[in-house]
Structures are given as structure tokens and as C-alpha cells.
Image 1 (tube, rainbow over the protein chains, first blue to last red):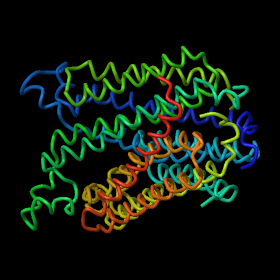
Image 2 (cartoon, rainbow over the protein chains, first blue to last red):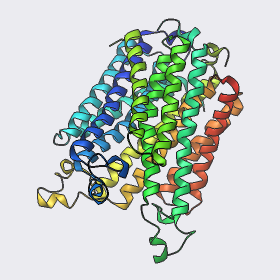
Image 3 (cartoon, chains in turn brown, purple, green):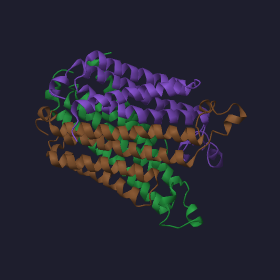
Image 4 (spheres, each protein chain N blue to C red):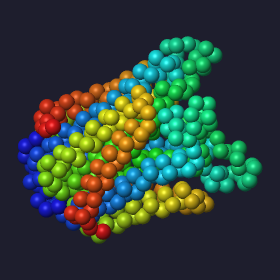
Length: 155
Length: 155
Length: 155
């Protein structure tokens, strides 16, 4: 991990910034999707959210779970669980001076896999579509972690 | 995204570090709040957590969900979903060389919006208080992402 | 927070990169553990995940929650809630120029505490094992946040 100061100006870092921003914007879309399904399915978690649709006893029936809402929420949590390690390990990886083409390969596979994961989850596509797209993103992160640990291990 | 090495020493980066730390400390308070409500409401998720309050069959009645505990947990998860993108995109934004006043505006609105979001969630205040504070933080993150992608897009 | 450009090359930063990667790999193991328990306990959240074990009405009985699966998922979410603040505040802390021995102490206690937390959660060990390991990690993050805010506060 030598010469980090120069590397942070590199094309690898710009590519990291671009793909990270894209995958986070994709994750942020899950919030809007959850809100969309909550409103169209009329399924809320908080009493104060139901007042547009009813009051008093009438409002209580909207305090319920809906399969579509729960599906989006599971996809969102799965994003958090997988995108957080990618972003942090990806930053350390970008600072470890990888070849640009190798770095781009890692970033593109991860972002592509997570976009496909969301499509597979929300459609839903039959398994193992979702499982394989999850595994592809997971493998990219492990591969970057391996480089980080072999380049600059300090225990 | 030129001259990152100098920018990382800048006032923008110090401001980023300060507001990020504050909003994360706020998020960490949610853990303590959850524990507080679990103990005062006697509502636990794990059998081993209930032994202080009872044993055997008597302990099982504390393995339950409580509306206040669940409310704090939803606020905590909403924090994670929104603060993670802010922090990562905010770091890239801080490295992209924005004007200090513009950067401060972004950071202050986001942190203020998230503090208000927590107050609106836990009180709870009538909607659209919580919805608007969520939207304000979301808009700040989108605005920073726009600058990151227009400053240094590399696909 | 002066001279960040040099500090990013330091042993403190290498130590940060190493411990961060280790604790994230530990967190990623939770995904695999969840999948393992879902398959061995036959407890799934999505209809499309149950087709290997049954079809039609027969498949529906596998759409259920299982105590072991839920336990791993709670541990995973607790990881996210605690590891995200550690990583972000830890990065700012590493850039604030701490003594190497102090930094190593922080990183080692945190990573050790989170590994023990997972063991205490999944075994499960009697309380307060899990509570104390959670508190140790929490205290490390607060200690680092204190240094970040006292070194370079900019409001």
C-alpha cells in the first residue's frame, strides 16, 4: 500500500467513486420503492402514517404487513449487508494500487450483480437467479479483501 | 477530482469528519434507546436476556415484541439505510473540492434533518413531519451524488 | 488533522485497513450462516426459495421463521449497527494521527469484542457475556469519536 497519496488521484479511485455512487443510488431507490408499496398496498408500520387513509378504529386495519412491502424490505436489508462491505473493502482495495482493468472488472461485476439481484428479488425470478447474483457480489468482495490483506497486512 | 491530496487537509474535510461523527453518535444512541425500552418494557428477543426478570416458564412471557421497542428499531434501521449513503457519498463529495459554504450547507441540513427525523419518529409527531425530514436528508445525498458523478465520472 | 497525506501511508492506516477487513469478513460470514440455518432448518422467507424442498401447498410450510435463523439475523443486524460506526469513525481516527500503540489497542479490542459478541450470540452464552462484548465495542467507538472531535472539530 505504498504511495497512497498519488493513488487517490488515480483513475482507479475515480472508477471506485463512480461505481460506489451508482450502487448506493440503487440502494436508495429501495426506500422509495418501499414507500410506493406501502401507499399502494395500504400497509403501514406506524399509526401516524395511516391518518391519510382512515381515522380511529378504521386506521388500525392499515397497520399490517404486506408480502410485497416485506419483499422490498428484505431486498433493502440484503443490499445493506452486502454493499457496506463492498464499499469499505473496495476503498481499501482502490488504495492498494490494483491495475485499472482488474479494478474495473471487480467494480462492474459487483454493481451488475447487485442490480440483477434487485431485479431477481422484486420480480421475483425463480431461484437460483437471486442466489447466484448474491454469490457473484460476495465473491468480488472476498477477492478484493484478499488483495487488501496480502498487500498491507498489519496485525 | 483533481488534487485530492491537498483537499483531504481542507476545512471541507474537517467539516465532513465533524458532521459524520455527530450523526453516527446520534445513530449509536438508538442502540442504547432500544436497550432502555427493552428493559423498562420487559420485552426481549432472546431467552438468555430474560433471566434477570424470571426463570423457566415465567421468563417466556418476556419474549415478546413491544410497540415502543419496535418503533425505536425501525428508526434505527431507517438511520442505517440513510446515513450509510450520506457518509460514503459525502466522503467522495468532500474529496471533489466543493466550496466550503456549499459543503457546510449540505452537511448541516442532513444532520439536522436526521436529528429531527429521530424526534419525529420517537415522539411521534404527526405526519408529514417524519416524511419531510426523511426527504430532506435524501435530497441532500442525491445532490452530493450528482456533484460526484458530474465531477469525476469514470465508467 | 494536519498532514493527512503522509498519515494515510502510515502503519496506523495499514492497521486500520487490516482490522477493518477482518471484522467485515466476520460480518459477511453471518450471511453464509443465515443461509446454512435456512437450508438445514428449512425455514425460508420467499416462496421461490422453497421449490427445492416442495411445490405448491407442500412448499408453503417452509415459509416460516425459525429461532436459530432469527438469532443469526439479529446478530447480523447488530453487527451492521455497530461495525458501520466503527469503520467510519475509525477511518477519521486513523487520519487524526494517533500513536500506533493506542490505535492498535482500539482496533484489537473492537475486533476481539465483536468476534466474542458473535460467539456469545450464537452459542448462546449466558448474559452478560453478549452485553459486555457489545459494550466493549461501543466504548472503543466512542473513544475514537472523542479524539476525532477534539482533534479537528469544525462546525
